[in-house]
Length: 293
Image (cartoon, rainbow, N blue to C red; front, side, top):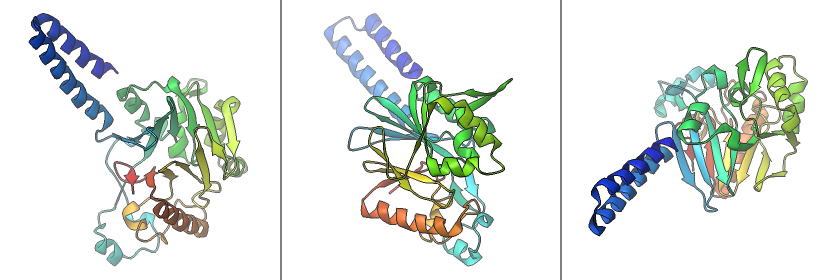
């Protein structure tokens, strides 16, 4: 990591120049430890990313993909009264984000969704700040195929799409894949999946993916919307677009939910599942910093 490397080198040079005796060397070590600790904390948590450590020792980093602060408008949720918004203190909109999550487990990176890409996505910049090369990411698990979850998989080139994660294998639900391939407006989905066609694995609900990640049915937002569980972590995708509203009133859908009845059923079921199992939720549209108990 470039910043951390500079801290280490600066401390080492200072120790060489001024640490002539044992006391000087010891002081230099203490200074280095303090600076390194402070720098590591800065890297692990900022306004744009935050890392938590799971019981297994795996780490999960929330990465904010949208460039500015984000609030979803009230009219995104049909049927919600102005009085309820006022009671919840949400008259100015519902805090949200566009997010991705990077898990490091058993020395390997797993990326959950890939964000906005050329539509304003910040994933690439933040990976660089975290010292992670896209080529080092070998597994990408997709919750669904909406634009703000898959556009970061590619960049636009003169002859079409270029693959961003050159060594990655995509994992996508078969129901989601088949449904989108049968839709009329799917050029972006077909184009992006075509770039990864030689590294695309389709799974069924209930399957266990590499690193013991479980794929769970959350149909409703899209035909094959998936949430993923790893130990005490539950990546909930687009289960909620307005956390402050829907955590208390899961009966309300966003206009983006394709099957309203199934979306409500999935939201209630998954929220109860998370509560019953004491899981930490990681949501692609939860407000910063993307995690919720």
